[in-house]
Every structure is written in C-alpha cells, then in structure tokens.
Length: 343
Image 1 (cartoon, rainbow, N blue to C red):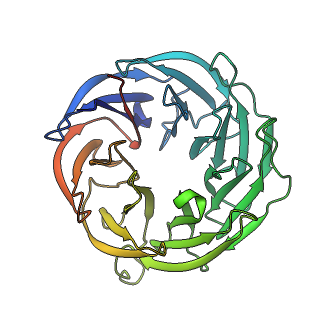
Image 2: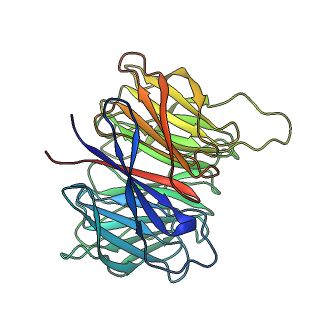
Image 3: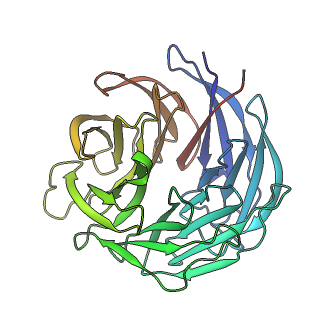
C-alpha cells in the first residue's frame, strides 16, 4: 500500500511535525519534527506551507519580520532537509506555487498584498519580484490551471480577484481585477479549482457559506451557481468562521471546515458542479486547516486549539467521514500537506 507522510505546521513552536499514516487503520505514526528558521517572538498564529508541483520540496512561511520563507527537500523516506531561506514581501496567511514550481505565490491578510517570489535552480527562494496591493485582508491565492493568471480570495473586500500572471517572469497585473463579488460581509477565504478549471469553489469565512462558481477558461470570468451554508444560522451575535476546503483526488467529494461549531462538512459534486450536502462530523477544536491524502482514502484535520491532528476515513461510495485516530502535534497546528512516498 502507498506510504504517505503528513507535514503539520505548528506555528507556536516554529516547527513542522511529521507523521506517517497507516493505510489500514488510519493511525498517525510520529516521524519527528523539524525546526523552521526565523524569529519566534511574538508567537505567530499560523505558518503556511506549500508543496512544489513535483512533491519534492516543501516551503514554510514565517509571519514575523523579516518574513523569511524556508525551503526543504523531501527525501525518499519523507524526511526534510533545509535547502535555504529567502524572504517574502509581507506576513503571508497563504502560500502556494505556480504550476511550474518556479515561483511562490503569497497572500497577506494583514498587509493586503499579493506577492510573487522566484525559486532558484538550487531550490532556494529569492526576493519578491512582484507585489500587488489589494482590498483589505487578502486571504488566499492560487494559479489557474493554465498558469496564466492567479485567483485570490480577499476577505475584507468581499471579492475574488483574477490577476494576469507571467510564468516566465513572475509579473502580476498591477491593478486589482475583480471577477466575482460575494454577498456583503461573507468574507471569501479559500479557493479550489475543479474539473479542469471550469469550476471554482470558495469557502467564505464570516457567514460560513460555500459558493460554487462556473469559470470560463477562455476569459476567466466567474458565474455564481450556488451558495450553501456550512452550519445553521447562529444565534444573534455569534460569529461564524468558515476556514478551509479540499476536494478528493477523483473530485467526487468536497469537504469544508467551520471553526465556531468545530465541524467538517461533506458535499457530493453533482454533474453540473453544484453540491449536495452530506452532513458533518465533529472536528478537532478550531479546524483551521486540513488535507486529503493523495490516494483519497483519508482526511487529516489539525486542531489549532487542541494542538492535535485527527485522521478520518472517507467512505468511497457515500463520502461519509469516520474518525480513526488522533495524535498530538504542537501549538497552533494549522496547516497540513501530505505526500505519497516512492516505492
């Protein structure tokens, strides 16, 4: 059975914690921890991770000045070796790579910035080559499937941006280009493409909704198809907190997390890309980040408050989640990346 290794970002300890995953039981097997270089005072609330497209490099973004980003080579056994450190343009809440792996893409919540940082031939990030000022609270950034534009969810602006991107130089369009606006106060947070980029899903933080958009690959325009609640409307004054979303590799199921009720919500993708709700299960307290294994059999969820990681088996027919195991990770456990090892 394919061996899989999970990397869990624990910002309070400036560490990446490694777990092996038992492919039968879903048990999480501690595989050590690696220190991430950078300042630690004051303690950051999160430390974003990103995998290279070939799954051979892992990047970790420190959110304290001078905002270093560290690159780690992933060995055949899943171990991490520090390759080097570069700098980001601001405190990045989200990190991704472009489709080629030549550039790191960052979204800064506190700095209201999108930025592009090149990765050298030696695998070490350099200095930013493009910075774009956005409406308040840029929360995530992803390259489109064609690698000719980036999409960014901007929470404070209630908007999704589409910025032209040059994969040769890393240049971004210099003026924010909105392609969709959420409901007022919804707070777009994280994005996921599906079906070759003809669909885009967005989890909205402040009203805990999940929006489905049809995307025109030719022009990148988004058309809203559906919006669903993750949890029932709250009592007056109770804040909601949608967080993360991920699709199974076969794109049959989508899951999203919500932090006021501490749940993972499941959905089935219909033929037209709209979603059918499957129900929810209890998550680790404050499920800010989670990930799905490359084989699509398990979901791993980090609890920012509990400092633990829990594994859930995904039923291949119904998409239902069943909790398998949990293990202590560390303070401010927020971000998970998973790779399948060779052999």
